[in-house]
Image (cartoon, rainbow, N blue to C red; front, side, top):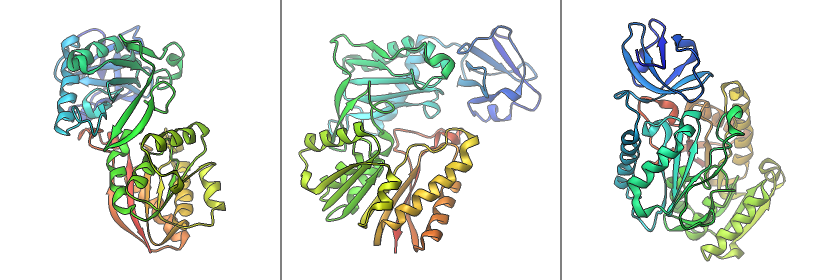
Amino acid sequence: MHNPFIQLKPQKDASIKRFHPWVFSGAIQKKSTALNDGDLVHVYNSNNEWLGCGHFHDGSIAVRIISFDTPNIDEAFWQQRVHNAYQLRQKLNLTDNTNNNCYRLIHGEGDQLSGLIIDIYNQAAVVQAHSIGMHRQIEAIATALRAVYGEKLTVIYNKSQNSLPDNYGHTAKDGFLYNPNQSEPETIAVENGVKFHINYQTGQKTGFFLDQKNNRELLKQFSQDATVLNTFCYSGGFSMYALQAGAKLVHSVDASEKAIDLVAKNLVLNGLDTQRHESYCQDVLKFMAQCEQNYDVVILDPPAYAKTLAKKHNAIQAYKRLNIAGLKQVKKGGLLLTFSCSQVVTRDLFEGAVVAAAIEAGRNVRILQHLAQSPDHPINIFHPESSYLKGLLLYVE
């Protein structure tokens, strides 16, 4: 066996043979001594057959497998993985498209790189490691990005400090991995022709929420002459699309003052009529409780209510409360776009919460469309957990 190694208990290799990339700690029979978090380990079944290799972590998910076909994790490996991801985005017409210069390049397990996120904003790549193993390979990943993109990429920024486990995150510093022109951490992203100020140093996540690209485009179909409420608006993604499509009035609500300031900047950037828009820096539920206006379209896009299984029940109740409030704000014959990005809340559980909300709100509701993350956030067919964004387009009678 290769060193370092992990050997699984008998009959505990079924999910790995089906190419699910997580090895849970309870499946381990024995392992190398003195394993450190982030070490590359080789995984074997109880018959000493090699199954794959990945990054070790002393936790519930003990190994995140990054290769089922080669034990050689070298410079060529990283370059090939980045190249494969780039080719997919080429097929999606994202890599050389001035109308869409922002997209997700690496979506963790969806691109066979569990624990790694890379988003592209114009000529900047923002790297976010969610595992210690990926963070330890951050320089190799940056080298692979430069090899694949060449001069198309002028900045590579590491934003992993807040995404890593607590016992490691405090030692990881965000900062530029490649920046020959010494530029500031700001750029203009263009998504479906709509412009957004991006600050990948101070912005949420990597700077923007790219997973809603297709759903924002969908909103335009229903925005002409409509009144629209965009809750948890962040930098105003849905708001900009609605206004550009001819909405009569858009209200943007977020508890963050920084988010509301970004909305104002993006309105100016897109040359939109500010007379048709109002921002509210307020808790969303409090706003809706006090709001006497009903809307043609309401958007509920909250942050993740549950990041662990232990919080799943509370999250479902929170989605129910939010959707009760949202349904009450929709005019008769209006639309509700409602979302959950909590990975541990399945689509069935989320829809169950919305059904319960419709019953309690006393509204007759029909599902027009099931919504999901944009295609640049691909779902690994062997890893259903990579399908995290659930949404519904609802007609409210």
